[in-house]
Image 1 (cartoon, one colour):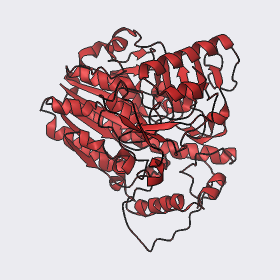
Image 2: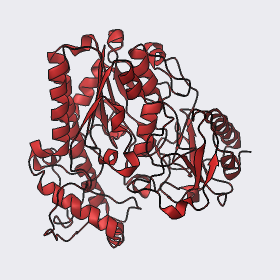
Image 3: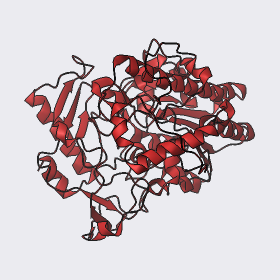
Length: 499
């Protein structure tokens, strides 16, 4: 048995043809849907990028205990468990966060790995003569450019783009070329798992003229200004600019579709459909002006961010081709699904479930899904309602529980250890006590928005929060129930008002 995962970053569910979009050009996602099971109710878990990848490995929610960070020594890693049982695992990615301090323990869980450079200000090429002035259409970004690390990231991105001026040199193209090479070399072998993971269509929405030409439109702004890297900030631009940025995203999305098509072509050519699982997934979505915001982390996890696409082809279930399933599933289900496919036992600490029953008959594996950022609103959905629960005691501190003290791009500073304590062990830390460190990173703290409840049936656009206390109390009960199952830290119950 073999398995391929094609993973994207910031892939918007509602901008794919197979999920009902009528203006983007994504025929290969539609082609994929005709071969696979398409999940209509897939929800994020731990946000954003690396927390989502940690739960992809571990099959458990991690945002109650930890923000952005590496795999921990006590974590159960799905690709590593496969590797240790004789299943060859190979990661190919241009997701630069894997090579930073905050992602440094992920790629070595695989049997082998390859990287493609150049995404989002990746510290790749060096050109000390580069002094290009950063001009942007985004008004709130002009303030951010006064912050040297942010401006330097944009300058480095400009240097990298000079080295990706042709299609075959772009990082996504290189990533998929390596992935296709692996398939061509190993299609006749057995017992392997290939993860082809591209950072696209994450911002910046860098694409070349051929993909931009798919979306002809007029733009009345300054064409010399950067318009493909929205800040995580309120929209301060006119509708003409907002539309232009959405077309920039769509152009990159269509590029993602083209490269997905190359994988499907090889599946056809080698008839891998007979014995190869194919999973196509993402970590989260992205706001393109909806709700008055750009991006993620700075605002509540609206549906455009938290309701994500998922496709699974299981060669044992060919009769499920083209079927859509409505049961609630999450990223935490992918690790146990792959372990089950290869005949391996699912570890007790994994909270996700193999998706066999959902694929077969839409039998639910859960009645609700909990999701969120560390130290922020805690969100829950039962498919009908989405409830976003803000801290009732926001002055109660939040702590990182870790043995791997790194932030996204740097190690913890010595001052952060001043009041460090040992805590635990927790139920999932394999009898290890862990460091308890007061949270300094405010990524994703949306407490100031208060608690919000939306009825997705009556208000799919989440335009008006409702005050149904019966529903709110039921959703609070779900959050508390899951926190107990997840062995959440005691102080969070006080902070959230759920004691």
